Image 1: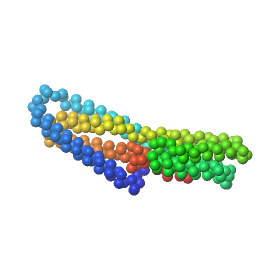
Image 2 (image 1 turned 60 degrees about the vertical axis):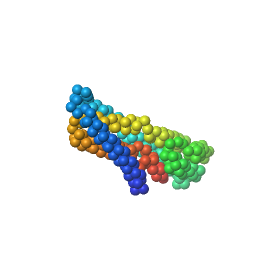
Image 3 (image 1 turned 45 degrees about the horizontal axis):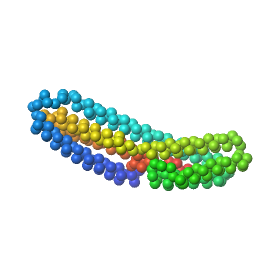
Image 4 (image 1 turned 120 degrees about the vertical axis):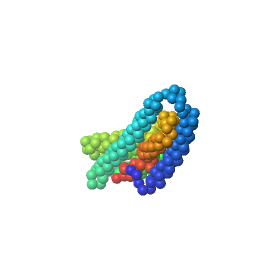
Length: 250
């Protein structure tokens, strides 16, 4: 979700992309002029025009795969947050004074939320587990073990243990998504193929420089807009469009 305080970051990212796109466009137009001067009238020296469409097609496919990975990671992050919060709410409901009255468990759950929000989520974007969260998890585990001596019915205890297992699974999924949110090599491939696509467009239009400049501008605008929109979501817990720790508050 994009919050108002995230807008500056989104526009800063857009500014960097626009600046890089302008530089790439200017370089591609220089190549177009060079191709026009050196290869004009020499059709036999270059491959047929349709050959260069292969490069833009490859770029579109690779970018589509990267975008699909980004959307999948964001969807998984949202699901993990819902699962984690749901498990916390169920455990807190059981520990409430109006239910089983387990104050140690209730306190451990609140300490877990605080540790996760502060140390794992807000400080490092869920890239690595925090010792504070591990300590809080152990406190929850010990509180559940203590519940066996408090005459808690075995059916309810079994359900609470199952909820605790779901809590740990959701946390593991969240940390796995946070650790692999940005993949530089994939984005480097997207950028390289995008630049090669601009070179191919310039080559194809070597004998029609005016049309070539128009085609380059259209491709640059479309590519920059697409890359910006996907990059906004590329870090589910740190980017301008992100899932915040408020999702697990209860």
